[in-house]
Length: 258
Image (cartoon, rainbow, N blue to C red; front, top):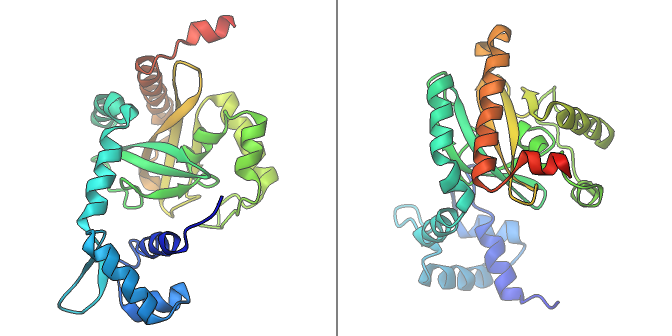
């Protein structure tokens, strides 16, 4: 399939902006894209005309435009899983006091599509729209553990096990072993594998075809993780996953009989 170079370049420019680089000079964009400034200028003007890029007139730097926010919200509001899960996420957060997230799989990464902030502590790394690696996150493990062998092989083919913290899983063998444990428990766990000082539990959300379509996670500061309370918290988390799955058409007894 042929690639339209100008479109590919324009999309690559948009992908340069993130929480670490919210604004960029044209020279920075030119250097990162390995293209001359005149070419970059033309691409930026086209994106700016369509409101996908805006220019800060005070410093001349470019930033993402409101059109992306508008399009992104359109996508999110059309995700049935988000509207179905919302009240369950709020209920779980109120019962436990912890931050609750809803995450879907996009290719080889998780994407946060909803979040309810808890009272036990602010979890900064989880925010709507942010991507998260599957190998070092409870939600990522819950999303891929129940995939068929062919699909799992596709996800792990060429996967890079970036070391986020000293506790991060860094090999395919260790990750596959971890996924087997997730399947046995029917929930995933990670302690400071992605973010120092944070631990997380996650359960899968299944649809009417018994496919995992999302994961619900419960995050808390590691210092607040009390072993004596964990069984009750995990039970509540599992119940939430089951309730959302039921609303998505999943029938546990039906699949047990089959």
